[in-house]
Amino acid sequence: MGIKKQHLKSKPVCKVTFRIPKEEANGVKSVRVVGDFNNWDDKATPMKSLKNGAFTATIEVEPNQEYHFKYIMDETKWENDRNADKYIPSPIGNWDNSVVVT
Image (cartoon, rainbow, N blue to C red):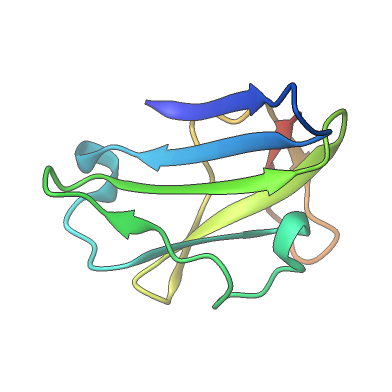
């Protein structure tokens, strides 16, 4: 559950796997992860729906960085990750962004 990070020895990359368990997905049909790593493109990183009702996506990013991100559920609801490394106030609006530290 949560965010898994894997630093590759073969190249300077960190693989980050985002996972939303079935209980948190709460019956949504689609989830996308958006953030600094994909220029906040709400179409760039769809999460795969698993048979058990969970969602997952893996991206490759530079190590030793902080990336702000959020989930978009059913293309309308923006959510943070309960397992984020920390939260930072968003420069847009009055809410926080999740942060993953690689």
